[in-house]
Length: 558
Image (cartoon, rainbow, N blue to C red; front, top):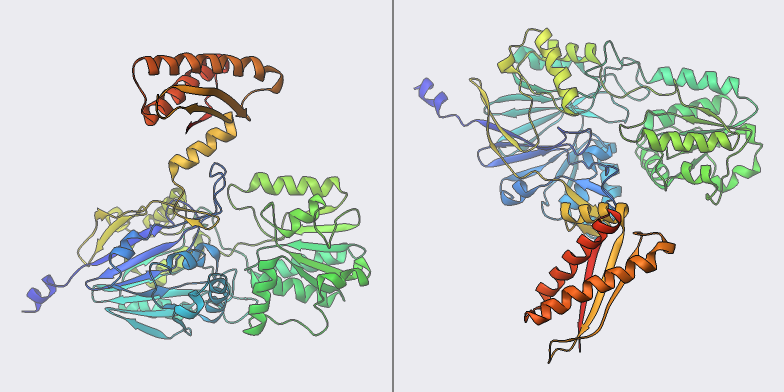
């Protein structure tokens, strides 16, 4: 009877909807019978060819189609690549959110910016060691260390077995805030039996251990001692609360006042202060407007813009458009972060601008990662002892590097599964098998529009940036079907002005011939006429200057 009952046990489905092709947009659904829970809901930042796109968020079509099953979002920590898509996704998938204290605080601040969401979305703060029951699942929050306070790993209990999801983590025995990672709990889970480990792969290629966050504090102390006679400006991630804490500690120890600049930086520090996740000595923090009242060598500015973002505070300081702070000779600028892959060019541009202005720029040895290196990953595997290895969080090369770590620990290849976003993995004691694929396209956010810009629009924008636009207009008598005005041809960003008149006159003549031929053949349908206009001009501009501008035909009727 027991064997028969075992055969009837449903399999657990694990469905990553993002986060496995890049570092960003992390979101994974876990499904067992009538229950779905979703771990994280992050965004990605647009790549260079995504012209005009503000953010990229995951496709949650599968969640919308199965909304009756979805029990809630379980969030590991408060970074944008894990929470940034929530305000957009919650419009269609409005279910409760479960997270630790600071993470909920940051999420609530984001929801305030989107009308009605803060009021309509249920939220629950979960403590480390506490479990929540969500349908067929029980989820326990486990203390970890990362570059933001209150980061959690998850033990996901299902009838099919226990899944341990590390979230983003490192093993830090001397954290700036709170306790070290709860290795004992990982070990206890391992002894009881873990079906699969989903482990952070970001630094899997790096050997050894990630240094403690406190090492950056010692670096800051050295830099402050070496630059006693300059103003110090430090750029870092707004969400790196531990880093901000160390900057404030060092500034206070050296008798400096601290100003904070950048909307996200100000916001997160306010939240962290309110929730007592950061400690700021009395009379240390001053408004950026007051910084001019103190000698430069007695001040520190903490700012956003460490990734070279064009509109961030540091960029505006560097190019002279910031209203309150200008940077020049006598300033020391510290980049306390590493460039995210793809941002290297933007960061280098800002560094060059600062150097030209005479600032001393420090961009090495002032940062440590918040992600585990190879030896820490091995430690977690050794404690958890999972049956299956499911690498997560990173590009394919990162996932592959973790797979090699698992192999070095004795895992057989069929027990290591590298998933792609959209894969439906069925998991049981007997096997791990990808059985299906769900919709998993990137959704683009452009201003107030969500999902209304597709690949065809991006291709047009790319063509506009490369070859410009040509606008052709005619006026047609609706009764006789004859052309009574035009064609007029205008261009922007396509041809050099001095050459334009001759080329445009040639375009008008060619278009006139093509349209007259169409009318002679009794073609009066506007759709067909527009196609003729586009084809004629496209062929003409390719023949004359080897360019393919976007052609916009306009027909007016009188």
